[in-house]
Image 1 (tube, rainbow, N blue to C red):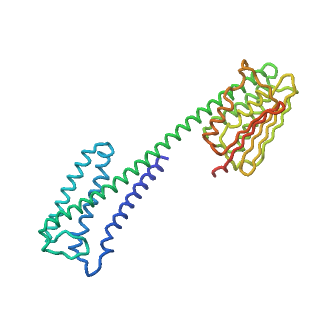
Image 2: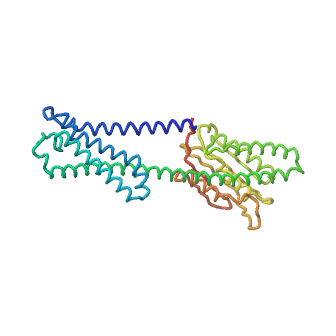
Length: 358
């Protein structure tokens, strides 16, 4: 993993170097492309566009590698302007010296020199201003690149922090589900230890298998694995059921190609056993899962026997936990529908699911 990250960083740096080289090659090729054969002269070219462009590149990389990071982005504006003004003055002086030493007036490329204008101060100041403008444009481009990169990096860092916060919250919500699931299962097993020790022993063994499944810190699991988990969980919940309770469970086959976030449906099943069972009246629980056009439909129906406030059985986590997880992972891709009619509580979770990554 670390080596892959190192190679990725090296590739990004190499790509950046290549982009810089290509851009400057294009910039330096413009004078060649715009000149005609009879106008071309290496001396004129060196004094005219080529040397100022080299100096503009020096200004660019001085700011790109040092000045902007050290001064401008740290709000040391005086030092930023001071360094650049001194740089401008030095480079413009060197340019004028080069022009004088070659006995050519500074000029636009493509025009023939006029030696009689060499001593004209107007030419010096106009070219000095042109050099100043060229260097300034170079700095503006550099600032634009740096600021854009900083904004991109800031946005990436913001997204990274948000993702870490979401992962932490999801992990917390998952850990809220697990202990209560474990607690409720142990309650059922405990009630059977005295009356049916063999059944309690087998149930404890199955609970161990379920807890092993919960230890895998996967963001997504195969749907068929989650279904097997739900079946084992339902079998644990049925340990204490009486004859007046009718259970019907239906799960689809051939679901291994789909993936889903684990433990989403546990609160729905748990609520059905918590609120749908009476010790004296006939009770029903209907659990059904279907896959229709890459949409998972998970339906739970049960007779409704609401608990009073003094009854602390169940997890106490329930639908609030489920809704938080759904909003973080499946926002805009799920529906949670519920209603009570004729003493039957009905809740259906519909999720757009994806095929698992090979």
